Each structure stands twice: as structure tokens, then as C-alpha cells.
Image 1 (tube, rainbow, N blue to C red):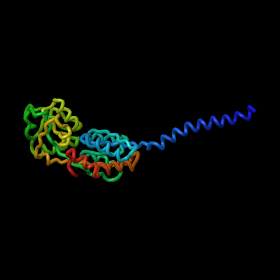
Image 2: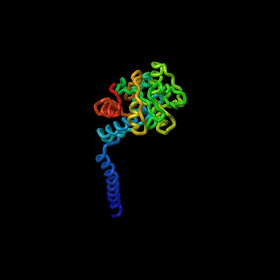
Image 3: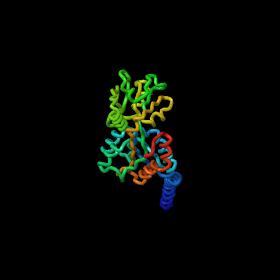
Image 4: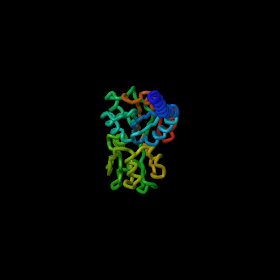
Length: 258
């Protein structure tokens, strides 16, 4: 009797074990969609807008999680060229995008989705009385700009050449957000950032527009990358950024149309 009973008990135990484990896994799969992650490398000046666009993209695509790396476009292009695991790249100018396309790292041609121009940011109330681009060359004025390899720095150089005004900044930063940080921290009398940065900073800064900014308009391109972990998801995000929902977010932040 004992020999005949043991196999039956083992079968029951095995069935119970299989039933418990298998039921749990099956339930998790059927009740929640599998998570898909998208990694986006984007210019620092896109932090506010792309964070919002990412949230809207996640809402439109259940189970998708968007993660970002925001930095200067030049640094991001270098990281991608060195093999950083990015799925999408959005640059603040065409020059840095060309570094990536030149290495055949993109999946198709980049799409232009926005434009931006410079504006002077000062501490609240503009205590140094900066009124124009030429004012930034006043002796003793502490001015912070982007480094030349960063899109906002290249735009600054373009305005300098076109106006004949040469600046002597106390600091050159690797991203436009670093410039803005120096101004909001009271470490500078003025900084050259984008129109969108001034708007996004709210009462933390006072903006000073200048007409010469139109001589250096930056065009923003975005692309899916060739080695994206999920090619269809990467393309979907690019389409979302350049589509109606993305355009609305960008327009609200002060970006121009491409």
C-alpha cells in the first residue's frame, strides 16, 4: 500500500507546486503589460519640454517608460559615438547632429522639430541695468556664456561676429542650464541663454530680448538611433515629438516652428 500511495502523493504535491508558481506568473503577465523602456539623449535646453512630452508619450503608450539624459549636445553626441546605450537623440543644433549622422549611427534622416534664439537672463529686477547685447561688453560686468562647442555658445559667437561686439565672459559653461544656474545663483550679472530658458525660469530671472538674436537661429533635429533596443518605439517617439502633441508642448514653452 505504501509503495502505491507514494507516487500519487508526489503527483499531487508536484501539481500543487506547479499550480502555485504558474498561477502567479500567469496572473502578472495577463494583468499588466510588459514594460518597454526608451532612453532619450536630449539637449539641456529641452529638459522641461521633453520631460512633459515623455509623460504624454507614456500615457499614450501603456507599459512604456521613458528615461532621459539631458546635457550639452556636444557631450551627448560624443557619448553616442562612444557607444552609449541611447535610443533617440535630440540636439540643439544641426552641427552636433551631423557628428552622429556622419558616423552612420542614425536610423534614417533626422527630423527638424523646433527653433530657438538667444535672450539675456539677469537676476530678478536686472540690477546691473543691462539693456542690450552691446551692454554685455561693459567693463566690470560679470557675464556667463556657453562654451563655443555647445549650440548656445556657437550662437553667441555668431551674434558677436555679426555685431562686432566682443564679450569677455567670466565663465564659459558646457550647457545652457549651467549658464542659467550661474545667473539664478547670483554668480553673474547676466548670462546668454535661450528664450525658452528665460520663460521656463519664471520669476527667478529677468529676461532682456535683443534684436540681434535673430541672426543666430538654432534648429533642433531629432532622430532614432540605428542601435535602438526597440526600433519601432524609438521611431514612435520621434513621430510624437514632431507631431501635433509635441508641437503644442514646444510652442507653449516658446520654441519656434522649424
